[in-house]
Amino acid sequence: MAVHNTSADAANTAVRAFLTEVGEKYWGRIFNTATGSGRSIWEKIKNDVFAGECCYCGKHTAKIQMEHLIMFNREEYGLHHPGNIVPCCNDCNKRKTDNNGRHVSWERHLSIICKESGKDCEFELRRNRILRHHTEGNFAYPKLTDNEKNAIRVIAESLYGGIKMEIDKSSGLYAKLTDAFVIKETDKSS
Image 1 (cartoon, helix red, strand yellow):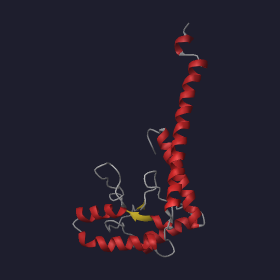
Image 2 (cartoon, rainbow, N blue to C red):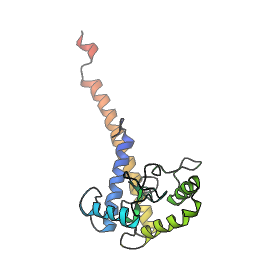
Image 3 (cartoon, rainbow, N blue to C red):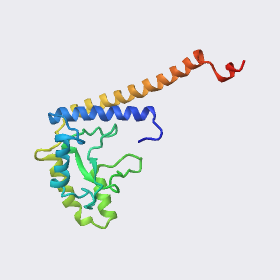
Image 4 (cartoon, rainbow, N blue to C red):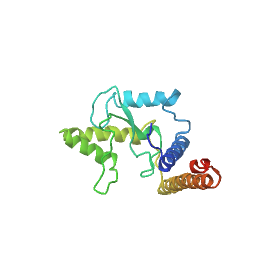
């Protein structure tokens, strides 16, 4: 739970909701990983495809988390879709950034983790397992055209900007209304 909620937090949540809805359209049904068939699919991905291991470091842990390969945000616009989720331990679920502060791709992230852990030799094996999950079989991520990707990006950016602007505008309106109509503590003492 966030300690300090901002208009950017609300806008980011709206973008993720949009990316979830679009992912469900491509998947052809609801993909709620917290319950029902969505949870069952997540369990299959986690336990059957990845054998209960973190897809990046290979660690078995009870606290395995869900990672979106194509990030589920307004930077990469990854869809919430079975082919885009993989199990990840807490340590690996902190995507590395480049010199410009932008998050690296999942493949670069995997490469860094393999190098840092001294397991360079496992990079290709892990990369191929992730790629097979992402691109093949029942859970494959949709092959989006450049036009589809651009449409998702444009809508997500518009949604983010619109939500953030509305909250900021509402906050400004509240300040004006309280200035105009709310009796201030100093006025009460008169």
